[in-house]
Amino acid sequence: MTATAPKPKVAFIGTGGTMASLGRDPLDIQDYGVLGKVMEAEEILARVPELAMVAEVVARPFSALISSRIGFRKWQGMARECARAVAEIPDLAGIVIGHGTSSLEETAYALSLGLRVAVPVVMVGAQRPASGLSTDMPMNLLNAVRTAASPEARGLGVLTLLNDEIHAARDVSKTSTWRMQTFRTPDFGALGQADGDRVVFYRKPLRRAAPDTEFDLAGLAALPRVDIAYSHADADGTAIRAFVAAGARGIVSAGFAPGAPTPAEAEALAEAVKEGVAVVQSTRVGSGRVVRGHRMREGGILAADNLTPQKARILLAYALTVTRDPAEIERIFATY
Image (cartoon, rainbow, N blue to C red; front, side):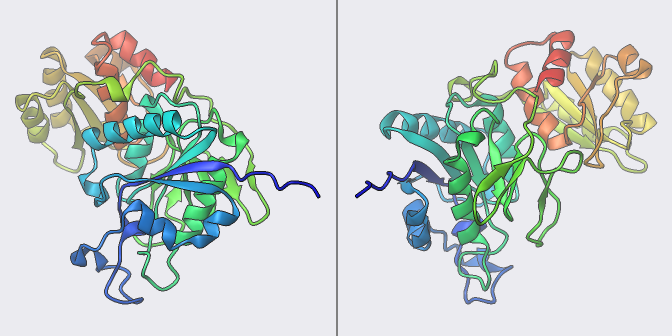
């Protein structure tokens, strides 16, 4: 009799969010957060016994939080927990991190820039709580585990898995408040899909990602303050000057497409550059590149490429941990 091949080992780090939340009843799919019932990693796994069909999933407890409370310190904790999981679990195939969807894309990109583990890391969330009618939590989690265990997922940086689609952390954005198909990559589309028969990939991202980066999230003492100034009609630069006064070392301008602030904001940004603040021009529309044209070069303002403002903020903060040279920051934005 042929021996059955052992199932791959996958670590699951639970950080809370909608996928870990319990509402009042099956129809409570929007206001469930008021109860404060959030499951730990072991409880989440217990609700999806089908996971045993595809992998040996090992729970790694973490803080159970709403994702709007997750930032640098929690990113750093996740990075360290990923490193511990690799060190402590023999033959670990991959890691899945459960996360609230509100800031999932930011955590994914922060980890994709600063992790130091070679196994695949897949971020997963849900649009409906675990107790909700037709919750997407079980299938999302199962497919995330399958993706993390896939040898083809190696070397792609941190990935996200929701609604059967696999996206690169750098490019993905949450695009809808409630719909299941919320996570999209506007410019390039998904990397692959988790179908019923197998996990399939169709393309690979070319920008550098973990673990092959010049950043080490777990080893950082702090990230420098970087703020986002959102352009709108009649924006007068007050927010930009307030950010500088508050000690910002970098500012991302979320400008009008294809990448421009109001004249008053441009004046405030020019003042910020003169005070030594690194300024990166992004756009508020969520798709397309910002080109560093003559006026931007003349004013010492850098281009965010096609990063959304929230992603540009993270990369600029990382960049400022290794350099203050505008030419080097420009290189970093062209690399990651």
